[in-house]
Length: 373
Ligand SMILES: *Cc1c(COP(=O)(O)O)cnc(C)c1O
Image 1 (cartoon, rainbow, N blue to C red):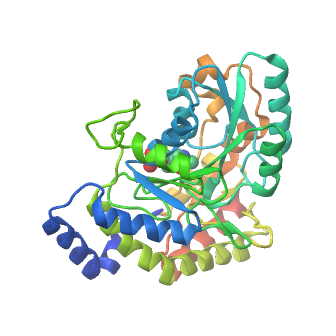
Image 2 (cartoon, protein in one colour):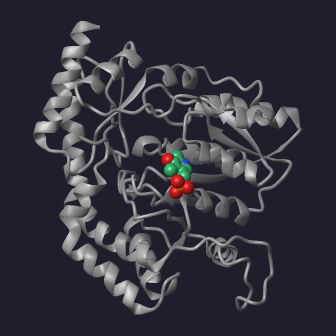
């Protein structure tokens, strides 16, 4: 059993995947180009954003957004402490200061109340200039965008959605990766929509930012690529990855999402009286990048599951405000909920190709273990 079985996915999609890859290889066009533009149009249409611009990774997608907004030294960006390292790394790479915000215990997403406290602190302190909120769709669940939009508007802040784990989720009729002024997604292989290497994309409705990101991802090109008007990156998607993503997107829309939803529901029905399961408010859909529970004596439970051949993972063992790499920027910021979640969370195997027998093995093992603990 695997947490996320990409090999099984390949075997299921092999015929169309092999054909798509070979066709691209023989096309003679390898970076950006028609195949990538077709994918960008499809993804923009799916999330209902005006523009989709692909790039080399989710981390670069975040960087491109911050660069499009000229976020730099002296600026502050609010980011949850309970997320993957790259969310805040992108801020520090721009020379800006990440302000670590605590998360909500049940949604695992940025806590609007602590966000307002931290905004007030930065506004009072006057040391850095508050510019943006980066909200993360952690484990696939959208952050509280209706409220975050109000807070952003009230404080004149830009809203960046780190939708690296969120593709496919949503609230009501709106889809993840369409909530921020700019949203970023990652196509890292294990994300809800992954390619066969690194990849990412930026979504926005804003024409000016889209044009700027178009330039930034190709060394800050001007009218042509040997006329450079700004300092940018080399950050583009390969045609082969676009071909892979087209095949994966077909499966994602046809059946993968339905299956993952059903597995999550099955876990919740079976385990909700025993451990803390994710609860989705009505109308909110997760992309189920992870199915994360909270369980007493987590480390011991994890070992006992491993002994039964069940792989699990701790996302994340260290909150960002305690990461050594952020010691110079994050000192003194308190995020007690993030601290305690790092001790309690455990992510279970979930992916569209997880067999019913395997789901039952996971469920039974957790029931047995919780009886013993
Ligand atoms: C994976 C991830 C990223 C970075 O994406 P890469 O494609 O690996 O660079 C950023 N933020 C979050 C929340 C992620 O899970």
